[in-house]
Length: 238
Image (tube, rainbow, N blue to C red; front, side, top):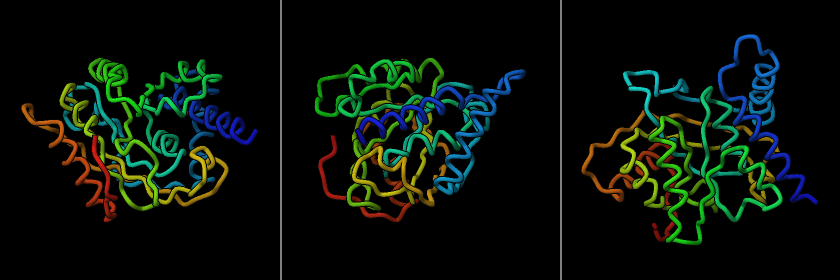
């Protein structure tokens, strides 16, 4: 029962973030009200502190309005909601397929979640869909560690797939460092806890054509190491 309730709560909040993250439309106070409630949840329940520029970089700083890749470290199940609450543009998240319970398939489709089979190196459907979305001018959110950091406050080696996504799309990267989220036994358990969470938006990163995906991945991970000061847990990249 706790599993279902936790997942349901996550779905409700994620749905609100996904659908209400757009700037409130004129003449639609309901949309604007719900978006503010989403933000109130993050600020009151998790004392969210936001650092760095959160304006849509696709329309700021000379960018041409193309796609964008948001790269985050992964500390808790609440991470996508906190990052989305800090942004007024919609982020389409990539999520581990084994965390997506079949009974809620309709919800995953409604939220346009991109399912990732983290147990297979042959399934390229997630990468293809993410590439299509970015090339169409959308924003994709990625957690290249592949799972929640354990032990806390220690980065996991980034998967090389994030570098491949950057290489294939040529899109800039907006790194977001997350810290201070609640520690829970289950990913969705963080929804029911309080915290003093922080999200730090780094400078937009651009990579020249001709580089390799491994080099891009390593460069992105270095930013997180420097921003957080955390050690990297030993493990295999892939």
